[in-house]
Image (cartoon, rainbow, N blue to C red):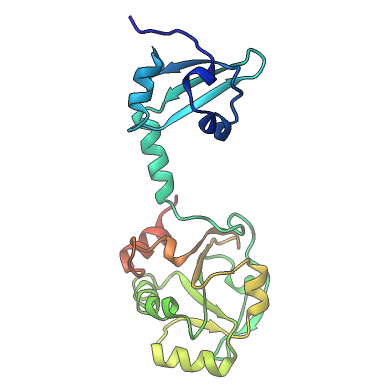
Length: 229
């Protein structure tokens, strides 16, 4: 039978540990395994070196319960860490704009309504932006029904040189520092997936959807842009 005695926190746990977790030394303690069964402090201490834990504080009863996390929760947390970090604009309308592309064609939020589009924020001297252009071109070629519109704070001449040199096959809109600011873009390159109603469904820094330690590739971009999650 497990030893389920309840001792004062200060008698079992180091003071810096208690202070970090905000647990007063006069709290009574109990410990549970990953299935929720009571265990001794010694068993908990041995297991916590390999398994994370949660704690529940009862401020009225001056008690705290430490519980080892189960495998399902650990897996969910690991999966959450691999998800791209969404920018603040996600699930909000894309900023309203009216502009002209480098080709002289009018483009606006109203004109883009009805079909989803991919918004790319870049600038000409950005190394990662340069590295991802072949990937964006390949994606656009594979999915011609999804418009790709690139926004840059560069002036038209600089943006045009970039587009020609990199053989971009999508719309580019220059002089868009103000739009980037309204969209909350702080890091380049940034990608946003905008739905047919003009709402930003996904918004991330490109590094967050690229393979770990590698530049963006087509499978990663396609998985992010075409997934409904």
